[in-house]
Image 1 (cartoon, rainbow, N blue to C red):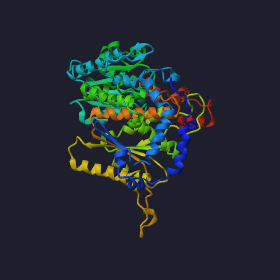
Image 2 (cartoon, rainbow, N blue to C red):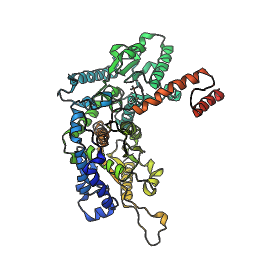
Image 3 (cartoon, helix red, strand yellow):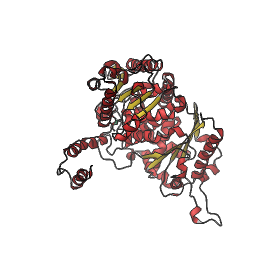
Image 4 (tube, rainbow, N blue to C red):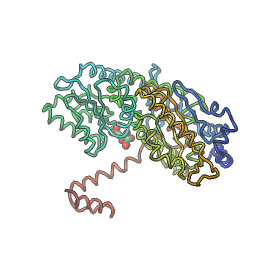
Amino acid sequence: MFPKINPTQTKAWKKLKAHYLTHGSIHMNELFENDTNRFEKFSFEFEDFLFDFSKNIITEKTMELLMELAEECQLSEAISAMFNGENINETEDRAVLHTALRNFSNEPVLVNGENITPLVEHERNRIKAICEEIHSEKWTGFTGKKIKTIVNIGVGGSDLGAAMVTEALQPFWEEDMKPLFISNIDGANLLEALEEIDFEETLFIVASKTFTTQETMTNATTIKELFLEECHEESFIENHFIAITGNKEAANKFGIPDENIFEIWDWVCGRFSLWGSMGISIALTIGYEQFEELLKGANAVDKHFKNEKLEKSIPVIMGMLSIWYINFFNANSEAVLPYYHHLSKFKAYLQQGAMESNGKSTDRNGSPINYQTGVVIWGEVGTNGQHSFHQLLHQGTQFIPCDFIIPINSQNGLQDHQDKLLSNAFAQTEALMKGRTHSKNEIPFKIFEGNKPTNSILVKELTPYNLGSLLAVYEHKIFVQGIIWNIFSFDQWGVELGKELASDKLVAIKKHKQAKAFDGSTNGLLNKVEEWRV
Ligand code: F6P
């Protein structure tokens, strides 16, 4: 169980408030001028990463106070509670153990007294087996053709992680394998994917923890109907459909046999689930060995997070810096800027991870919250973002801390491009910090105030292992913030209301009658559908 401490009532919070008043407006230029060792003090290496947080509005005292806040909110105890399998997702009475999916030691991990390590290993072996069967053509399509296209049908956590990782690891794809993702209930998504699909060579993965999600079940049903129209034989479903779910019965009912069903347990939260069977599309695309590398990279960060002192832990530092800006500088958003073209889906993935987890306004005691929680995550790959929204980062009135994710080596071989990409990334963090002061003939519009905080996360190369580490850092950062904010980060009740309310709107739309049952606006909108639809 988690502590239930209101952070604003802690001693450290009060000290941080006072510290903000005296230090919040110090310019980083001054901090660098006064301390030639600032980079050494506020950066460190972890495996293939260099994490530089020296371009933040912090002093050693700030970090000390932030760590004091973490201690007072019992962050260390909370980290242990998660790794020990306690039911920290209290509102759903569940443990939170995505970390167990990437643990390769034989240590038992107990969930309500049951050791889950053998279950994880068993499922991992099944992932390995399906990869071998498909890649070696032991498992083929109904006409004996090699499976070459993997279509993941899922939404939210059953889509975003796998979609982002497969894209990020494009240089590591197995020859002849292509992943596609159908998530949106908008039929355009399905039709667009269909254009690239040859049913004889395609494996469909129906990915849904609940197997009840409207989007996924509608897309899967339409695909199944189209598939059967093509092959005319129900028994071929087993060559072309597998399921990833915690609801075996529903998957059976859909027509998927037991041996094609991969398990996800209730102690795996959807948005952190790519490390287990939800990652099958990743494993099939990059090969099982590389999938294991991804898991091992994440596991290395888990050990770091579990064992390292708070002040030396990358996810803790990132989480606490974020708290510093959100709660003391009133920052409302954070930009995540990967200087790596294949990380274009990273922001969408992080948006779910961060905003579904920490977009909460009730604390762990069940009381309304009167301080800011959660933050809007947004961003774009460099350098595209530079030519659209960076103007606002530099000279706008919003205060937006940024993370620059910078792989040093690219796999594309175009060194000149890479050198220019890197120089742009470094120039941006420098400009955001330094700004440009008023000189004699300068017009005021050219003045940059600077002092915009950035983290630079350098990585030697974005291998599967290093990507795993990067993702685990962000997962744990989100955890840290949730602990400090005294909220439950692993439920998502806010998504439910929309789902419930959609069902009677659907009935009204399908009835083709005058809508009267809702509020004036909703009735008006529904009636326009009836009037305008062709
Ligand atoms: O959007 C809400 C949500 O419950 C997410 O948390 C989850 O990842 C997604 O729906 C998909 O759920 P399922 O895997 O059950 O289809």
